[in-house]
Image (tube, rainbow over all chains, first blue to last red; front, side, top):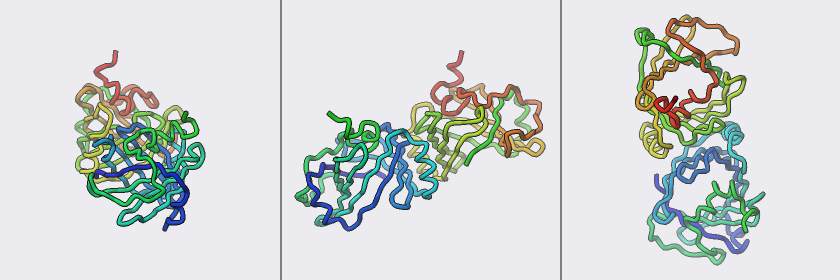
Length: 156
Length: 156
C-alpha cells in the first residue's frame, strides 16, 4: 500500500499529557537504503517486518508493506541488523479527527522528538497542536533508517 | 533456524530425467549483503520472503528465516529489488535417501547449473549421482545474491 504521512519536529514535552498509549519500540534495519528499506521492529511484544520503497510527491507518499512476526523471530532478526539499533517510545495522541504518532528517541538520538500524522489525501487539513514545530516531511536525515546510521548526537 | 547444505556444480543434463518436479523461480534481493541477505522469491504461484545471515563452518551452516507471502505481494516487492533478477528452474530429485535441488539458470546466468543437498548433520554421508561435479559449498560467488550482481556471463 501507499502511505501518506506528514512529519514534524516536536518543540515541547506537553504532548505527553495527551498520550492515550505509550509503547517502547526497538528497531533495526536489514537494509537502510531509502529505495528498499527493510526494518525489523519489536513494539512491546509484537514483531513486525516492514519494507519501504522510495518516497514520491515530495516525501508525502511511500510504498510500505509489512508482515507480523513472532517476538522471538524479531529478536533473532534484530541480531542480523546493521549497527545502530533505534530505541524509542511511541506516544499515540488524538488531536481533533487525526491520530499523531510521536516518537521520543533515546540512546544516540536522545533529544529528538518527531511527530507523524497519517492522512487519507495529500491535501487533507488537520488541527495542529501547540507542540508541533517545523515540518520535516521528506527530509531523509529524519528517516529512522538514517538516524540508525547518522544519529542525532552526530549532527552539527 | 540453521540450515546445513552442500553445494555442487552439475556437469551434465542427465539429471533432468530424474526430476520429480520442476518449478520456475523468479527472485530478487532487497539486500545482497551476505551478512543480511533479504530475498523475495516467486516459486510458481507461491511467494516467500527469506532472510539469511552470515555462513559459518566453512559455508556449511547459515541462519535462515522465511515467511510465506502472497503472489501479488511478491510481485510488488520484486519491483523494489536491486537490479539483477534471477530466473531459474528448480528441479527436485531424489537420490538414495536425500533430496537434491538442482537450479538451472537462465538470462545472464545461462549455462550455470548448481545442485544443493540439505543435510541433518555436518558429517552426514550421501550418495553422489554421476552428474554431480566440483563442490562449491561456501563460495560466495555462487550465492544467488552474488549471481544477481555478478552474473555467470560476466565471469572470466
